[in-house]
Image: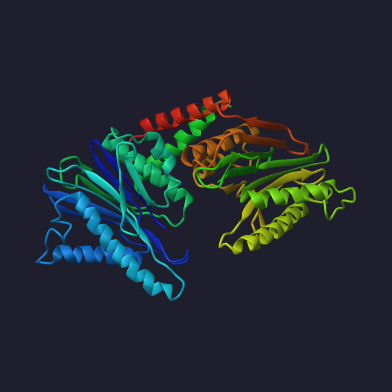
Length: 241
Length: 241
């Protein structure tokens, strides 16, 4: 399982992913699920992945191969695509093709493979955009009304986002919100695990503003997690039925 | 969908259920999902249901028919069964039979039907017990380590239970905990809805201690929900990243 979340705010984009993958409960491993591509000042694109590792890795590999191709064009490389919408379409098409191929291979043994992705970024002169890409390649976009998108194990971490995230939330509060949302998920689902990858892209910077890997036992994350537990317990105690 | 939760504490049993059923998002209705049977002072049994309404209603109807049969015996009526464990077995067997029958009828149209239940209660001289009954009739029991059981849409409401419920939680705090757990679920899943049914069974009373239907707009529930929102937002604000 996986938990990835992205916020699209007036001040910028904040993304968080875990790194645990598992093939059964007795076979877990750590894989990066956040991929960042930038031409600093011109464009920045982040992709978060959830689902079957063979699908997500192959999709990312194909996107990267296209970017590194010396004959890459606007139509083949997400680093040359004219808009972030076009990037979402390219990621969606690649994901759909890979998923279809792998699904067909697996169908012989009655298995299946699927994946979803979040694509977020900005190109100089364009707006910040964030998309959730479905396994079939179609997608939806974050808006003012719904400024966050989640993939993977989304339920445990949704209540806190529902309560505190608004389009005008600051980038500092947004980082707290996604980390607390992840904290609730980590507590309740064993197949979501540390370390975490945090990314902040300030509006109109068109480059990564902050990128941080949060390792197990990270003192800042631990302190925040404990402060939140205490705030919840204290709040609970004060409420009168 | 449904959300039902039960706590088994040193001080007693606390149960809460919603009442919304739906056949698609455009066809919702209100049905009781909490059923209480008691011989006050001798035994009290509560059953919470989640899943296909045709399965749960038929199961409850058969259990009731068996109770009302003038020739009911220890082996047929849950009001005469020698222990709450035996009650769980009877409920499990009835559920498994009903589910199997209905599932077979539906399989012709490639559909299926399933249901899970929570059975809780105490018999004079026995211990308080609480069980989660699976669609196949097998069951698990709440223990000191895991003093709560949930059926239906359980994820949104689990983080608060994980944080505050211990076997020595008071009955007043336990009511707060299940109501706040339900509050988070109501906010995030449209197919879980008011009114709510709350039940408290004090230890060794072997009767219902409190039974309350909480209607939409209930001032006490509303005040608690707002106080909790405020506590979460205030707690969030105070945390330093």
